[in-house]
Length: 293
Ligand code: ADP
Ligand code: MG
Image (cartoon, rainbow, N blue to C red):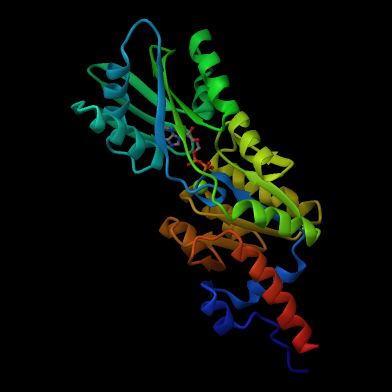
């Protein structure tokens, strides 16, 4: 028999700002059991702003920003851009650093004026086996409750300062989650950010499955695990760190403003950066199926 190609009508999809890169994968959209969302840049806008700096007695706010900005100089991460912008606004001159290294999903490393220096989040503390100084810890807890991402400045195995960054939840994220619930789909959040920030965003949106502090290579493993439990999985993401998970998922969906590698790894691209287009994809795929029957 001639196999029926039961795919989404790509022309209709394109009119809605949805680009189908893989028609076969897009067919699977109607059978999805769970939709997994990356947090930063997917459910949120990913436009980070430094809101507050906390320092220990050793340094001032300005010094902390100078060190963090300098160490972040060679990073393209949104957090790094936000820190450099904050330094610039305070007219702080950044200094050249040596031996820069990007620690994917964790932070950055460089030698700042002969001192080995790290800037990064909870994942980095976990790896370096460092507990934050009590004052920094309480700052971090307070900020985490507000959904703010905290990055730590570390020298000599100590957290000497921290910066809290705010991001905005995309307006359409809440409706997206609600619509998925009505369609009886499971929903999860999968992020490299800390537990409290993930929890705060999840609470706001009504998501109960939370996978936080997940390293880039483990995002892919998480998708595999969900598939082994018998789920057909859609993954929505924007970052370099989401690329393997987007490839692994039964349906990989990239945010249009995302990184090139995320877009290349996805089956479907959301040109308008609108998470609600996930609902349109599920509906379109159901519709085209009915038509073929
Ligand atoms: P997500 O999974 O939320 O999209 P990433 O994997 O890009 O996030 O980053 C995870 C975490 O790693 C961030 O929340 C941050 O704590 C830390 N991080 C990553 N890159 C940097 C950087 N350049 N500077 C500081 N922290 C960083
Ligand atoms: Mg992201």
